[in-house]
Amino acid sequence: MSIIVHHSRVSPVSRGRKRAKSKRSGLRVVRPAVTDVCDCPSCSGVDLDPDELVGSLLSSAAELAEVDDPLDVELFGGTLLVAGQLADGDLTEALSNGLVPAVAELATAESVAVLLALDAVDGGLGAADAAERLIRAGVPAPAWASELREPVKLGQCQRLVAADADESLLMCTFERAGRSHGFLTYVDHADCDAAMDIMLFPVEFQDEILGEIRKEGPAITTEILEPAEFRWQVEHVLDARTVHDRDGSGPELPDGLSDAEKPYHLLAALLRTRMRTLPEPSRPPAQHGAGSDRNRRATLELLAQLQAGTSQRGGFGSKLPAKRKKSDPAAPIYQIKVGLRGAKPPIWRRLEVPANTSLARLHDIIQVAFGWADGHLHVFETAYGDFGVADREMGHRAEAPVTLEQVAPGVGDRLQYTYDFGDDWTHEIVVEKVLDRQPGAYPRCTGGRRAAPPEDCGGIWGYTELLEVLSDPDHPEHEERLEWLGLDSPADFQPDRFNAAEITRMLTRR
Image (cartoon, rainbow, N blue to C red; front, side, top):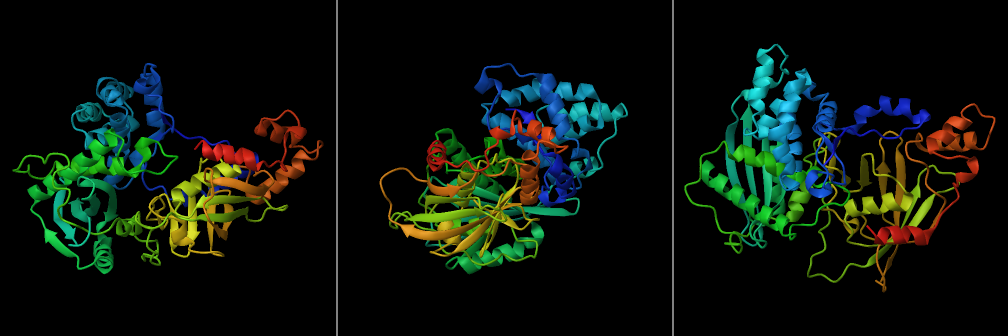
């Protein structure tokens, strides 16, 4: 599991413009990036290089000392610890036996910040003692250190119940040093009471969230739970999910994310930390699978709509149509055309995908179809709101629970997909036909035109300039652009190349 700082290959044209637009990323949480391919000792068989790991971690933590909210600090530490847990514990052991002493030895302000972040979510690593020694030796502590030490106080614990459903919601709030936040945990009682998803939300949105829940659910009532009982309930549903994840029966999660980046695992780790501040339950843990037919509750669709909280304007957006049920007939096939806005000559793909394809999966399909590298943020803009990686500040709701047919119910319906908020590659998506399912694998590409532009070339206008530069051997930037593309000759650049069968083969391997 490599802890890295991500560096994209950026063209000379777009480098300055991306820097100017960096605030659009909406990344509130400072945390290590984790590669899609795990090369931890357990998976690779290669010994962990402590020096490389320490250097990468401290580089990615350069902004950690400057964050305002200690909750972001806990999420930073939680990301690293979750990576270790999902790597069979090898990285977790390396943290306490190797990484913590190595970070402390550097004796920098970044070292103190990282050590305090690790201790915030796992007090058994010895990170707090190491940080305290550095602070006594004169290394400055981050401004948030004192606030992080303040006790976390429980607000209210409640369970939302609907008698004719198979799900429930467990909600709790906490306050520390004047800052409040809450957790909303979705529980599937038809699946051994396992937790399906978790949402972290600012308490100022609690009343609005509760209002939406009661509006959506049939005769939903609220049960106020004692702290010890609430802890028992939460730990029970988290433990059930852990069992399912280990045996491979857990819910399908979005493709294209490494395990430690999937928000459930990170928020589950933080929620467990919060539960340890509550009184110990008086009754023993429930056996796995017991009581799965109890307490029918509110729906998964509701949490999907609430995921990412409210938009920047404070609203929830239009209500999504209901998702197709397992008991419904098989989803038809959508023929969609995806065109790159502003491209002249046009650049487009015609794709056949099941109508119930999730937007997270559609993101992967478009990435393959256009040859993008999935190294930047993205968003789907629909009549029902914006969907992508959940981000309250940007108004993006979670894309994974939402299907294509929910946001584009019929022929002629449209949505937009924007990739890379610096270059702004905007794709127009239209449903052309609704087809019967035919033999063969889906998704597949049945038509299109021209290769997509190189990633990070500066958007459509930058791509137009790139084509001009490559076509003119006397242009002063001609050789520089060839070198940036990794080409020996302009003849190696083939903007008119397109092969639908090749794209289909790549899609079937995903």
